[in-house]
Length: 199
Image 1 (tube, rainbow, N blue to C red):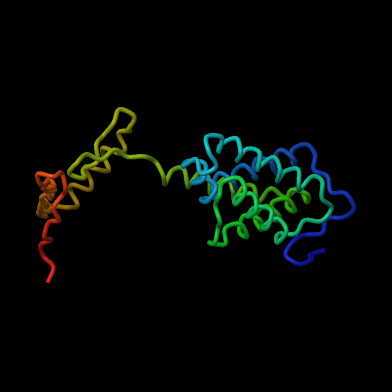
Image 2 (tube, one colour):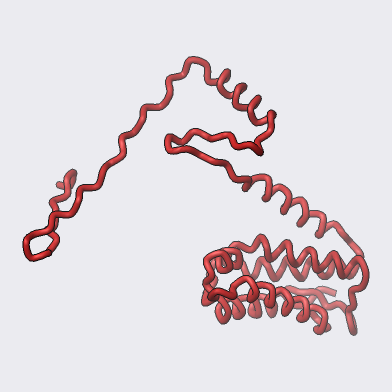
């Protein structure tokens, strides 16, 4: 029975076995793709223990699902937003806590039905996201540098691209502006320089 923006799951909803493992895997995937949380951890907005705070957040959310009888996305959204604010000092205004909460409630309901389709979608999205964000090394002029881990397929793709380009002229090099050194007077004060190009 659907109520508000969540799912009423009955007296005491319990996940066990593969359904519980699938739910926990899905939660980890959702949190690993939540940009606000990823940035907070990478930039240590919650201090030097940001990664462990993110792990605790995941544990708290799992406990929230396992202990509550009814799961509403709007309640979970408030929990997520509060956790980001308290633990990472991030006030999220992009609507992502709402999206994450809806995904989590949907995943939990699917796992209760032993429906793995939502988890499969998350796995596919994670796989395509990882492939799309593959690192490439670029030198100073913008050309991609091959490293030892690149495959021969990448080399053949580069050759095909070169053939497709034909006799097209290479883009002209743009000279880098060398910043002028500040002018300091005898008293040690920096003189304000006149900017060029402004009228």
